[in-house]
Image 1 (cartoon, rainbow, N blue to C red):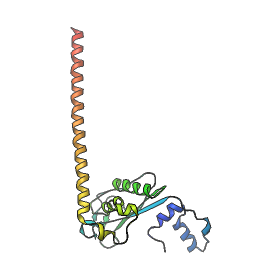
Image 2: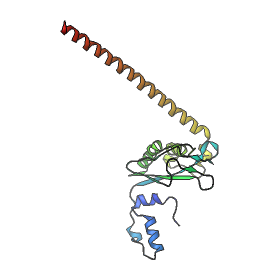
Image 3: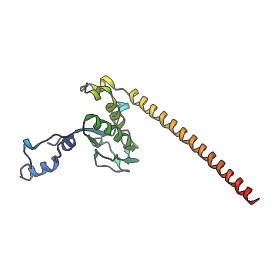
Image 4: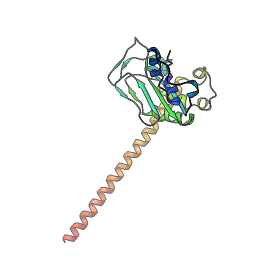
Length: 204
């Protein structure tokens, strides 16, 4: 059978596994031999689920009020949803597979973090925040982890703290931009007044 993570294999080998599987089902032979396989670069996959990491990863249901996928070099999204569609309770809660590719593991991880930040989903809870937590965690980045990663390192406060930090940074940036805009308006006003004064002097 085809593994959920087949895009990872496809990105580092350049072989379309789905196409090859269909060929086999049609009675055709594979288009390559084992010795033809070459591994190039590194790929990482994140399963984007309609689950709430802050509530023991229980499934969440609702409408995709916003659904915008990330783009860019080395980013791939396999999904079947669009903005406005419903996430029901009757099926597997996986919304999409987010895959990133890079020349090495570090680049693939950095692209994944950027892709997570650009992935805009509202209306339901998702595992995107948890995915970013994993990608940024020292244990994952160094490869020193196992299947007990969640029980060892993750709790609801982990994401809450990260969200609060990002919200604070966003607020500070917004305040700075607002202040800069006010200063720019003051400067424009001063320049305009000075210009009008000069014009009036010339007329006199």
